[in-house]
Length: 318
Image (cartoon, rainbow, N blue to C red):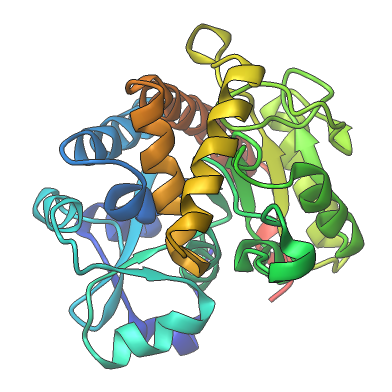
């Protein structure tokens, strides 16, 4: 699908992505907060490279997205990946932050919400991430709800993830998605995934295992004029999963520490992920890396299936 031409001045595609677009090859968007805020160096850059390699091996083209030099970069060079991985000043960008980072020439890593926006601008239909944001625990008093959820309601990109991060209130996250008409598909099981653990205990809306059937679902949704994203929940592989009871106890401890230190807003998730990594002796990081790689395989297969279908470019809402 061609990008929206009116936004071309904000976009800068890598040579690889530009060649893929010219050749009509399937593209898979990747976020960059997992590099700058989600993992420590050098595992962050190593994981980013490994995920890109998985997508290439499957026959698709990776497009890691970030803001650099006053442009939305669609596809990053090796040097740009290293820059993000070692830049503590990199902003964590959501919808509200994109204009500031672009106009002020800031280094910015895109969250799920911002990556969805940029992917749609660039005409990319499939986006692979670790886990989506959602309704935070205690949101009934803090009103802390990730902008990812509202973006899923408005932006027509399929998001392949290992469910929602286990630090969230998953039941309320799924309720929010239902209220806003965002379909939640599951792969290989009926239940929604919970990031470090395969099973959240909550049902997804529909189980659709094959890439071809997932692509047919997307074509049907967007062909009906129903704009907005789709969550595709792909559980962490069992061999790299963590026990649910253990991760819940550790999450509770990390949440209490965050509250005691007055950590709020967009700083909460990076803090919790770092503390959970420390409290699990690094096992949570291994799970995180494994699930992102697994999502890359599913996302690449979906991008290929979409590419093989006909009429999607005309059917997807603008």
